[in-house]
Image (tube, rainbow over all chains, first blue to last red; front, side, top):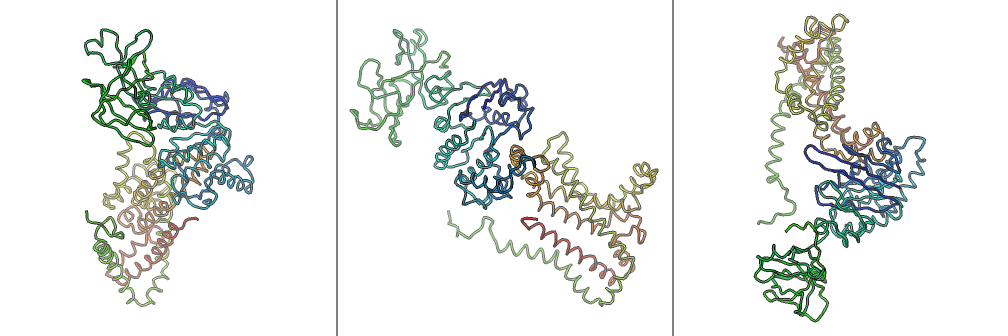
Length: 349
Length: 273
């Protein structure tokens, strides 16, 4: 299906929650609405679902303005952050609800409803809990039930508000892949809200990154990582350090000038990822840094460094595979070489 | 920290708490009621039968139970709408309206009765407008109904309001997005969690209306067979120093009230209707 969002703005009192949001989705991608809290991602999802009316702009499904469509005709499957399962109904009654409330002419026969409910229960691996009430289920099971309920009405588009927010990390990872599988099985457009970069990158085809009610970048996870359009995008995606750099012969070189030279000779602050700050032999372009502390986290060694006689702190992350370098100890010095520097035109110092 | 045995509850002193609860019930509720019961057992059965045959009492009981049921029904309905408005719809002056709801609790009911009579008497502000259409409110059953609603309305609102506030708005939104029309959403999604509270609101309003005396006697006119409520008959007996008679009437009134409240409680705890 084709989803078009045209210049959508929404204000809550003094707060501009959405500021001229426009984008188009074609085909049936799995899209993450990513952003820090307060960036407007949940508001955007609610506007798309028709739960909030935008102050300006319009939302079109397959060319039709959703305000002209009745809720039923919009074909939205929505999963709420806290699931919003009907507590007085069993899981199978919850899933059947959307089919039972259809007008008589469109409503499937009761045996057909039962068949579809069971098929959905099997799809989300909950068939053994059909007659339980939501209160008797774990968080992950409720999430699956809410997904099945949303899919029961065969929506054109599936929307999920922070679908994994209330779950522990193991269940979270499992359900992520589950969502990807269900999305592929249903063959529909899906949008989910998250503030977790890893979550978005792991399963989404497209990421829409929001900040202060605006879209700052939209693209595949790959594009966001390799072509960040602003320091905000770069910083939001992952860890970084700021390091002085200067352009020499068309190449950015990191170093630590005397403070008096910084302004004069065109030094600027470049961003560097921890995993791009690799151990090196003393040579040109390598920096000598003092080790403040280090931790081993799984296969990675995390180091906190600072440049000698300077306030500049660096984070480095090295793989712990056996190599030519013995692991350093705090208080000693190491040589590091930034293999990739990111300089943005408007990098704030 | 001192480790707690697993069975210990968060609130300390289970025994003192239980003792206090039972003691309170015993002194405040059970003692007067059981005294009444014991005294009632001394009344010969013949007197009960004699009282029950009194057409005046039967007319008063019909009026009391009939109007109380109607009042409780209206209170639950209108109170439900009011509670919904207060819980869900933000509007200017909501807090003030919210505070006004409780006012009938604080007002001496006789004052309420006098005020209502002044308004609805044939010469009163509202009564004057209704009189040309032949509608009598004061000194007629509608006046009694009005007084009953006035005193029991806060019970209905205050019972329902917190329960409505507890129902997440997302429930409604979920139902709407699943394509449920408004009435179906109410009937299948919002009503079931509200049902116990609605039953309680009905029961409390009914009990309050049945027992109300102070405000009603001012507006009712108290004409035997027409606008005389059952509690008034008891007071009349007391004024004639006929304590046994008053007690007999009280028992006759209490037994059906108790049975009705029991039935409502049963209704409240059933999972499906």
